[in-house]
Image 1 (cartoon, rainbow, N blue to C red):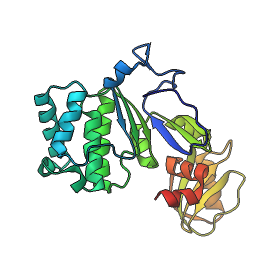
Image 2 (image 1 turned 30 degrees about the horizontal axis):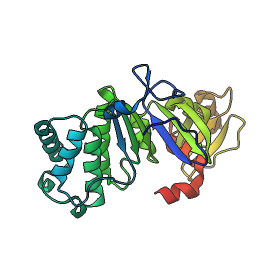
Image 3 (image 1 turned 90 degrees about the vertical axis):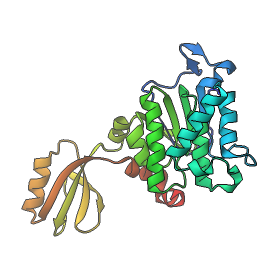
Image 4 (image 1 turned 180 degrees about the vertical axis):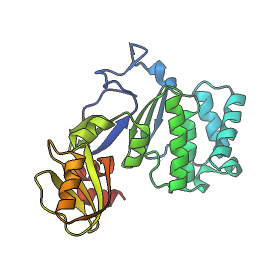
Length: 268
């Protein structure tokens, strides 16, 4: 069942690739969402919901048939997918004999096998190593490029920056930030100067020190400050500047500002 909900005490980032705001009622092709539209919806829960006593291929074909695929088509698609995600040799193995990550790959395959128009993904890459995380993100990005709207809950900010057009950060049921990725970055400072240096950074009316690890710092320019002005002030104060670059505030830094260092440590 898909319905419009309002957050109560939800905490976490919700990101999606549709450039329009959420409607008051879920809609498909201009019409209210109805149960018969479910075949065009793909849902990947955080907790897996597959038949663990059955063989991988049998489960995938079964769900493919439920989604309207012919048996032969579902089998062929499933075998191709298993080959791609490195599970070709597990086709006849019972699901409960697979690792959690392997089961998650199967669950994602079941979710996307009928090319749904709307994908809802809850922590799709949780617990994966960088190689497999990239593989799954490649697969999800292909669905986006094919025209699917993707709604994703994740704590991996690099995934957000790569895949998503819009983001909402919820804390205790309240939206702390909402908009396009660039909009949210602007809300939290927008631009920073990244400096590699020797010496002591002077106090300044032109910038605030965001981070300083002794030799590397991020400076947030204040209103009216320019790159040339900040750089000139550092040099005149006797700071030996090795490098000076302009960058956007990362979503990881924004995540820390919203949720705090402690929750970030817990998530990792």
